[in-house]
Amino acid sequence: MEEEAGLAWTVAHAYRGSGFFRQRLDQAGVDPASVRGLEDLPRLPFTTKEDLRRAYPFGWTCVPLEQVVRVHASSGTTGRRILATYTARDLDDWAEMFSRCYRMAGLGPQDRVQITPGYGLWTAGIGFQAGVERLGAMAVPIGPGNLDLQFEMLEELGSTALCATASFGLLLAEEAERRGLTGRLALRVGIFGSERWGEAMRARIQELLGIETFDIYGFTELYGPGTGIDCREHQGIHYWDDYYAIEIVDPATGKPRGPGETGEVVVTTLRKQAQPLLRYRTRDLSRFLPGPCPCGSPYPRIDRIQGRSDDTFKVRGVACEPAQIDGVLAGLPGLGSEYQVRLTRVGGREHFLVRVEAANPDLPGSAGRVAEALRRGLGVRPEVELVPLGSLPRTERKTRRVFDERG
Image 1: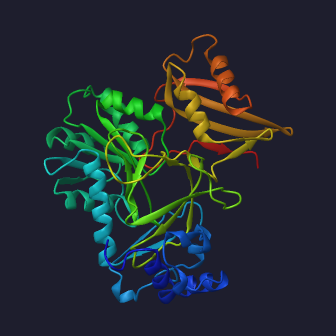
Image 2: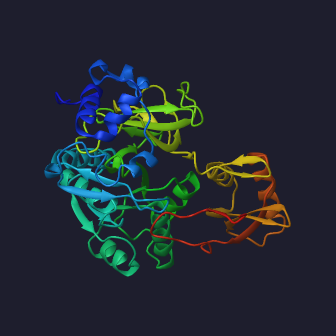
């Protein structure tokens, strides 16, 4: 690790470079000179997405703007965009982290990596590409949509790895089956992220494309994608603890969770120049996985993201999470990976409907069996409507699964 790396440098740098951080640390009574190491993390104040939005556009930036060589931004779908700024070293660090992800997925210079996430203000496309180029592999930068072009490149260039949102990965897998390409493509690896996706979706994509899939982690505030990935053991997400630190806290109280307990992922960067993070509350839910990974990697692990603390919805007084629905459906034979939740209110009564794709949706009694399994898993019984495989919407971006229309 370089001399500048570490928590003490990050806190001093943030305090010196940003009025936003200076105010937050002063309010918390934290003297940057008193911060020595990661044991001091609990003394630092949390920061949130709302804090970063209020710092828009450059209040969160801790270097002179002359040192900023690129900007990206969040989608803005849940509020004002968050603007991310990068120095040249930040971009170099991001590319290095991303290349680690590719190596952990078994890729090397011999591979041809087809990149389908969007380019532009979104961090994904250019992040995937920079990692490929650092790895020394061949980047095939298609971007989103355009299925004919996607398959033209997959067939004619012999792409061996596919990078996509999990939803677009599923769409491509099902389209490959429709075109009779299953088993005929050179693909061997899929790297998917940008949204939480369950084991049922993973199994369906792998079956249709005949590939091994990897769950990549990251978000705009923390460089972008490429800041963690599951290895070939598929026992959690390895994250790069030489670039950032993770805490797991109770989403309600902010207190540390115990070993193995699920909580909110909180991130503090250790090297980031333009926009460091101090105890940033991601809203992602996970837990630390103890002990070394069987793959032999020295990097620590968290579990695959189980959902978000702000994804929870209440129906008839019971708190439910999409991850719980995923888990139930994945254990039932004959169901696809896709579902949709509709919450409505009619005459003061709440209606909870789950539409689920099934191989044989008209099989007598199937909907009732799924409804009962969901009741056991959630603590509240939904109505269940089984629909044919492929009938729910597919998208090149993140798939929306919960529609709360109760008003």
